[in-house]
Image (tube, rainbow, N blue to C red; front, top):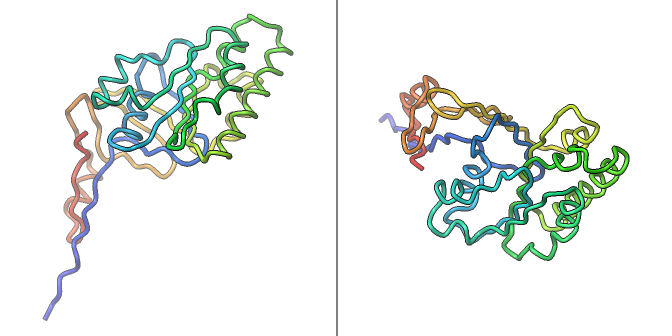
Length: 217
């Protein structure tokens, strides 16, 4: 007698999961990708994050719109407006890391060091000290780091790019955000609450042994 194989349940993700280590995000304009990835990573779990902001990326309105009503309780946000403030906040990270902290968010990590407030040699020295501290905290507490660069062609960017474990590129399309990341193939696009599937999704859907559903939230 023919025995059918056990059916597997596969949930298709519309955006990549963050990996352990440094996740380097590249996006255009004001797309609230940080808030979207943050909410996906922590919403519904007993985990927290530390967010050191520059260039006014930490829109709490965008964050609350992506997550549950309690999402704002999961993040400590520190805002920097000078390279010295950013440098100091980085060196104070351990004051904000809790037992359940899993994520460190660092948008535009190089921006304040490149905007001309300090001389080039001093900016590079401050930034290198800050970056080394980030790597130390990441290792000690086993954190996932989600960072972005304001410039990928500066002398400051090479260390961050070289130390990145996962590079995530995002662009807006008519169907929703398109993600390009290692070990992630996009089968569905989200646009608000709408989910639009792709041809590879339906190829999986018609498999005899795999039951596929698109991520709903």
